[in-house]
Image (cartoon, rainbow, N blue to C red; front, side, top):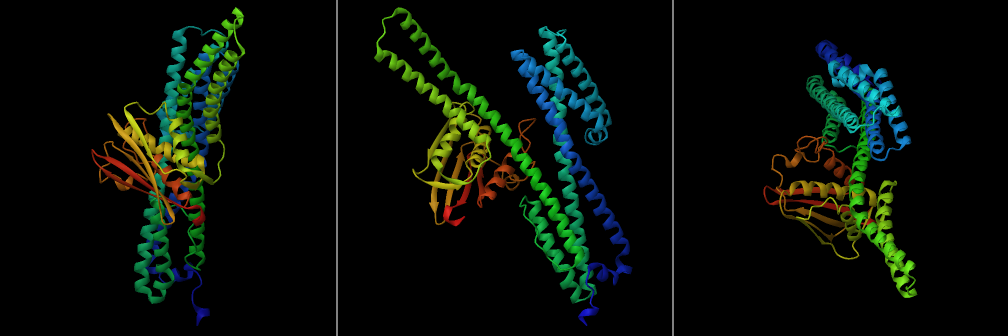
Length: 468
């Protein structure tokens, strides 16, 4: 009897083909078009990212050249502009799909004018401040197009994934109904596996990305799970790209702090050198006085080394190790010194010798995003408070602020990718999504409690080393 039973969904569906043929045809077409759209987005996403990166690199070398007049910066600027021009010609159709044909033509025109002005720089025909300002203005327009292109790319990926989820949900519901009419066997062999798959997809739609396990022995369902897992692997790759992008943005914050933090020690070293020169000229110096001056210079140099080392460590690939939580938070606070306004008090209530098993670079990224959120939330004077405690097999970290709080209807959405309440270019909605992703990578959880006009508290729970 078992030998006569259908061994694939194709054979099972064939028994009800008269009832479902038209619906299945439309369903397959919808899935095909959605996968085709997703495939187009994934294939061209990397190309668009390269184009955007070339624009941003061109702007960076433009600023360097206009500041320092280094010919190597000009050469690199021209190199990236020519790369942009070549990529725009090669992928004009794909970029036009995102921006629209008219915007794409405007982008070509702006890029051509920008290139011509760079060539004028190279031939020394552009040396006035007005000419430099024209270059900056066209560069700013290019940057706006790049940011818009990046935002549209992410939006279209999200829309395609939402469409795929809806199509698969409709398929699951239809097959469930079909199973009820067909027999108990069809319910067991088709509807239950699809229901499980539906649950996994719903979890995935909430940002919980993990490999979907096999839910059936039917060949078609196995292939569907493989396709979803392939898509999830690609999404995970894009998520890592977003994390690296956020990491680069964080390095920008560090560099802002670097200019602020290095100014004082460099001034002290310079002053000490001047005093030392005067003493050497006069010839009336003592060895003890000389040693005091050199010791003071050594302290300032060590201070500079500490800050630079922190930035270099942050930019390296990290690995999990045991580290004191208080030391990690203090380092993060130190790097953000120039970004935290004086009106905001930062208070630490973390027990000494409380250790966590984490990747320090990733956890610094978590704390930096939380600091940024709190700073944005505190409009006047306020306080950021970080405390921690041990609870059973967990380390619980409380990150609180006295900002404006988060409305109750928005609270469930804050960890969703590309969700933001910030206006303009102040945020793209990936900061808290990355925080959630990084905490999850450490086997932990993050929750949020908030009250409007009173403040917000993020609660991070991390497993102890022996529980990992």
